[in-house]
Image: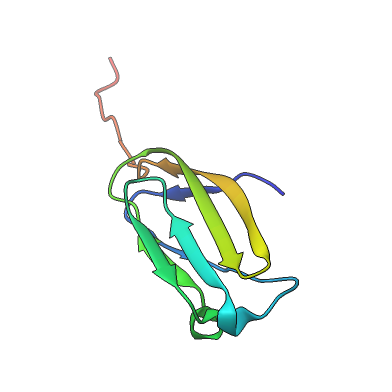
Length: 95
């Protein structure tokens, strides 16, 4: 638990884990919430995670959907993509 937030432009890694089922026969869809989605069939090929970069700030609904011959299941998280912090210094003469 905790806040899921990253600065814009960060390479975010998503890990997908199946508690049950045959990972070789399960299709996985990842919807990143920004109009991009990927689909893959061999979960072992994604054991290092799936990377995605968000180009704009906002709150994104990320959904993973698993489907096989026994049915389907999904999981959703919300990711807050923030602006990069800028350091601003003000300098003035003291009167």
